[in-house]
Length: 511
Image 1 (cartoon, rainbow, N blue to C red):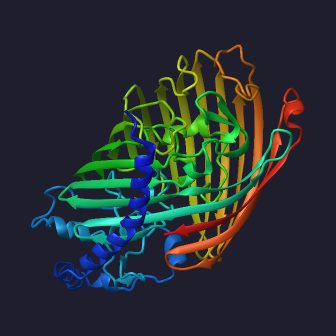
Image 2: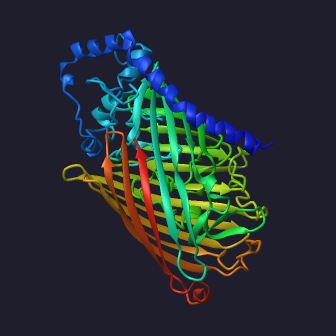
Image 3: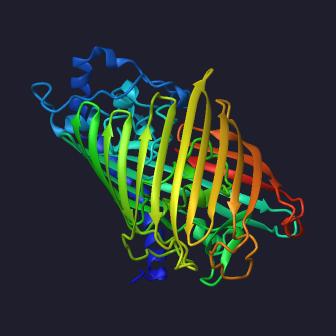
């Protein structure tokens, strides 16, 4: 039975108000522990080279190139294996502690794998590499990905917090366009503990988007899900659920660079598709959802998922069982889990700047209004992130997804997006997409999903930027804008015209 929305709404708001102060208080207590102080000085004495001061320039710290893959000792490879608490703190910064306003010990999050990740931030939840390799769910990103998070030790656990909130004014042009002001984004918390060769992890992510209303925000050419349980959302982007992820992980390192892992979430994300769009470096600064979302990464919120995988250095093999039905119109609840679909993904990071994946999934009855239609989905993607100059970064994602509707059409979606992130607070971004869509003529009707429905190939190009004029060690606030143009076939021009759309937004990032 679904959990009552009113009860969950109260619990969620109470958790938001209570979680951060409680974490700050525990972090302050943990930072004063004698054991931590003892370990700090013991490491300093045994390893003089680690006494160098860490950089205090947060932006430079983010975009520094990684030193190489993490090298952690294999089991029984040395005598006198350190205790669990020593292994935990070996992944923390051994330089001078930095403190936030609440006294929280803030550990600067280093970028990439290698020695930086070993001494500056959390290790990967799923394997012996730097945290920056991990994206949404169990997906991978390039090791050179900047990791923005506020990290602190709480007892035997390492925690990391992150938030990104957009306040947007959206104006979609043409006869089928509309305008709306709304808030989007996410608030994330993670915790990790190492015991010997095992790593335990917890993740939680919530979103303010349900408060924008069940019909989401105007977005020309976007389709998928429903606002009222009766008609499809067309030319609108659905809001994400309040609970985007509540998941746990366990990994066991069995070799110097290898591990096995299990991931379970309610909700969570199966091993299917690239990193979800709001987590990709190439797209995270763009507040507009891609129209390829339901071709590539729409399964990033599924109510019930279990994934098992194997990491062999730079290669990851994984398979998932999950509930394929996309979230319904009730955005504040947690839906009943059901493992009725499955997927598999192969990921490879051949060099630190590149991450590639190919994945396939069988999705049982994904759309609430099309219970008789199943989907097979095939995706492939390449992500590239390259630091350059004095603290700058260029990040690009190329992705393709194919939906085999059964019964129905075979539909392709293509995406190319890129971002230039400069040290001075300026970020420029762009996105180009092309999709085959057979739902655009069904406005106000229940779509049957059969191949008799006409298919249209549409395209969209967006470009914009943001300037963070307030920048501190753990927060950024900026203003930005973007504009979009469309490729509309002649058969749809009487409905769409030749529209231009734009968004103006303010963005707060806690990191």
